[in-house]
Image (cartoon, rainbow, N blue to C red; front, side, top):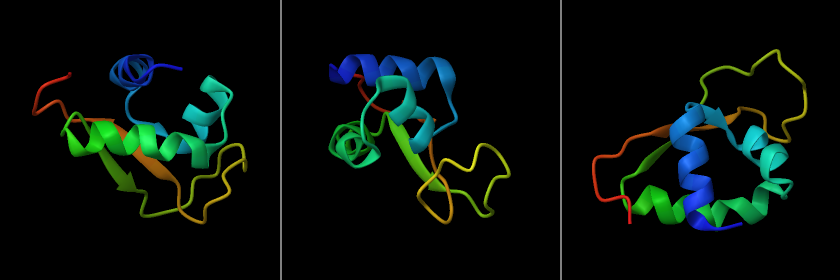
Length: 77
């Protein structure tokens, strides 16, 4: 997977959980974190921790889901 694929997917599907990204890209959530941090440091995405647990698929390994949202306050490169 390329960084731009991740960026574009978040842009088109935000807000989106870490678990949803892991499923879509068929990757372990932990393996996605450095790629997500790249875009977070550039100010393109924002990491948020949900205040409540969702009642969705129960597939999250986290107590509170980590959500990524589109920020795009800086350059997308």
